[in-house]
Image 1 (cartoon, one colour):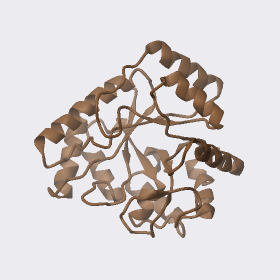
Image 2 (tube, helix red, strand yellow; image 1 turned 135 degrees about the vertical axis):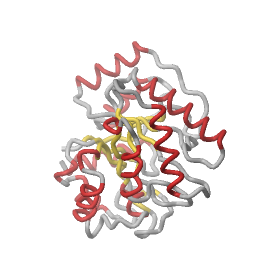
Image 3 (cartoon, helix red, strand yellow; image 1 turned 30 degrees about the vertical axis):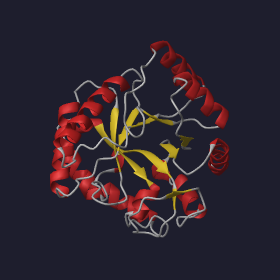
Image 4 (cartoon, one colour; image 1 turned 180 degrees about the vertical axis):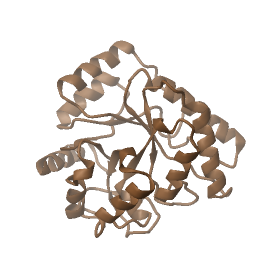
Length: 275
């Protein structure tokens, strides 16, 4: 089995997110640690988190996947942007300890003209400053589509970030199906081959979560345009094969498709019907 869910708003608190996902028919979910475009993070109520934990235990949820702000760029050419990103990362990881033993996912960043190698070094430098030995959160590097100057469009780039990070036992990877397809990995015709390459370069033991999205683009387009399940170039047959792949069982699958609540409920229902 897999765990399936979608992004939820944290506006009404953590217990509310848990109850919403139960109503949706899912058993995992994602949320943004702060506004996706930046800004101050919402204070965390310990009692609220405890009520969420009761739901997670009772309903046998899988791991949850918090998502960093899109504005957090550890490898910007602007020093002030990098400093702000590092501050966000440190704050977010400290706050994640109040929702223990979950995943914190972030886009590695865009080097904005500095070059990929410089970007990789700056991302790893930020992680080396933010991680600590006894933290309970696992930090996930997200696979990217290669749009603009994005870092993380290849498995090799993610591997280099991991290798440059001292406490890399705290790191994993979130594989986004739309992103790797747009990045040139043919998950429709050779998903086994893609996973074999991932295992050889990064290691399947580091694959911790899936962003489960179809794509509006052909393979290799490097555009990062998500589509509803079965309505894009990946297609429902391939999405189903991915969900049922033996190597991915028990991972949280997070829908980031362009949907409203009713659409997410329907997609969760579809995925559950495959199990």
